[in-house]
Length: 117
Length: 112
Image 1 (spheres, chains in turn cyan, orange):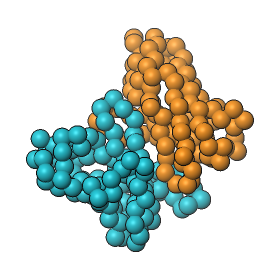
Image 2 (cartoon, each protein chain N blue to C red; image 1 turned 120 degrees about the vertical axis):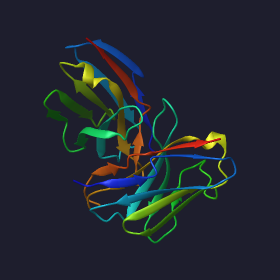
Image 3 (tube, helix red, strand yellow; image 1 turned 90 degrees about the vertical axis):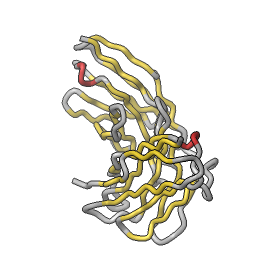
Image 4 (cartoon, rainbow over the protein chains, first blue to last red; image 1 turned 30 degrees about the horizontal axis):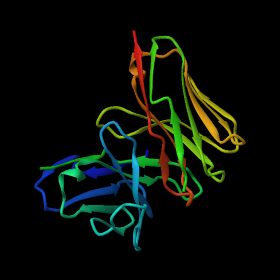
């Protein structure tokens, strides 16, 4: 079945530094990927929609200059948390459509636990 | 945009009992409604989904019902087992028809 690989699975960084998270579709092409953030005991909150070859679409309240998204190929989307602060500590999960636009399958990455100290 | 409400936030049942989790959505154009199970620190796992052209779908102990008129859908788990204990999320496709919007989740505890 469709597989989305996400790396790293966990990362600890110092305040003020930047962290890059990668999301790869291994056996299918994903023109669209989605980035979610999940705080402890909360739901998955959509941060942005990543579109291959074009700018990402950010949800209201998500700072596009802080959460940089790049989707340069059909199999790779990256999320860079810039100038990270402790309040950015969270579980970040990517997702991709694993079927053509007419289908409804969504595949999730394994998530990245970010801790900012 | 799409708004998904989920109830209850916690649910405790005895092994063998049934569990029901309910969700409502706001966008009448939404046409896809999946349910996910998430264990601590792991990715959500799809357990069942339903499209807007059907009213009910069943897969062994799990079933989902959809009422388009009322804009609500429900997850039914019968003969619950301790391994069913997890957080369950409902979701619906958003206004743009691409990303999934999730409910706030239900923590299900099944005691033996």
